[in-house]
Amino acid sequence: MTILCYGEIDLDIYLKLDRLPTMERSADCKDEFENVGGAAANSALWLANWGLPTRLAGHDLGDDRAGDAVRQAFSGYPHLDARYVACHKGYQTPRCSCLVTPDGERSFIVHWPDPIRMTAPSAEMLQDIRWLNLDKSGPLPLRLQAARMAVEHKIPVLINDIYDVDNPILPLVDVLVLSADIIRNRHQRADPGRLAVELQAVGGCDVIITDAGGDINVLPRNGERATIRPPAVRPLDTTGAGDIFKSGLLYGLLQGLPVSQAARWGAASGSLMCQFAGTTETLAPLSAVEALRATID
Image (cartoon, rainbow, N blue to C red; front, side):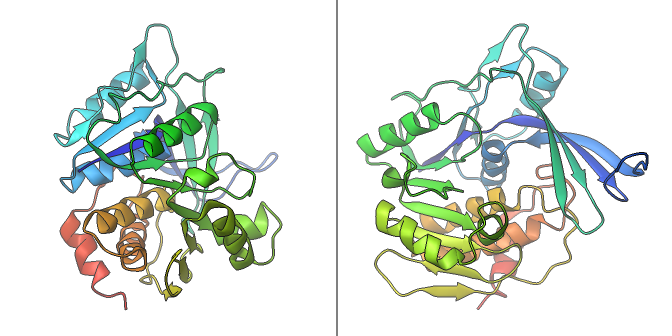
C-alpha cells in the first residue's frame, strides 16, 4: 500500500513579505523560516504524517547545511522511506525562496544546481508500490522512465500540470490534475474544460481541473462529470496547495473511492494547507482533513 512520490525535493526558505519588491522599493519581511519543500517532498510528508507508508525519491541532496536540514526533517517521520534520496559530497542541495504576500499568493526564486542530480527509478524502488505520484517540474527523462516502469509493474500513475497533448508521459497517466489558472494565464487558453477533454482523449485518463480556490471539475474517464465546491478559507500561504491536494486525492483513492469522491479529500487537504505558513512547517492531522471533508457536498 506504499505510495511513491517521485520528483522535486528541496529546502524552502519561507519569506512573508508586505509586498513584492520592485525597482528601488524594498519589501518588508515579516517572518522567515526554512522547511522541506519541492512538490514530491510536500506530498510525501503530508501522506507520511497521516500514517500512510510513503516512499520518496527524485532530487538528490548535497552534504551541505541545507541537505542536513532536509535529512533531519525526514528522520521525524517513521512512515517515510527516504532511503532513495541520495547525497553527494560537494553538491549543492536544491533550495527555493518562497516570497509570500498578504493575500497568500507566492513567487519563487530557485537556487538549483546546474545540472540538477536525480536518482533514477529502479525496480527495487517500485517494489510494493500502490500508486506513483509524479510532479512535472524539472528534467523530463527520469520522470518519463518512472512512468514507463510503473505501467510495466501495473502501478497507476498520478501527475499534475501536463498541458500539451504530445507530452510523452500523457498516455501513461491514470489521473491528471490540471490548473485552470495556469491554462488561462500561462498557456493562453480561454477554456480549460476543452483542453481537459483534448488531453483526456489522448491519455485515456481521469482529469481533475482545480481553479485556485474556485470550483473543482472532475472528468472521470468512464463516468459522469462532477463539480466540487471547496471549503471557503482565508489563505495565509498557497505554496504547495496543489501538492497537498494530490496527497488528499491519493488518500481517497487508496480507500477505494471513485475519483470524484477522492477529489473531495483533495479539496479538503489543499484548502486546509492554505491556512498554514510553509508547506511542511505545519502538517495537519488526518482528523482535521476529515472534519473539513465533511463540509463538502
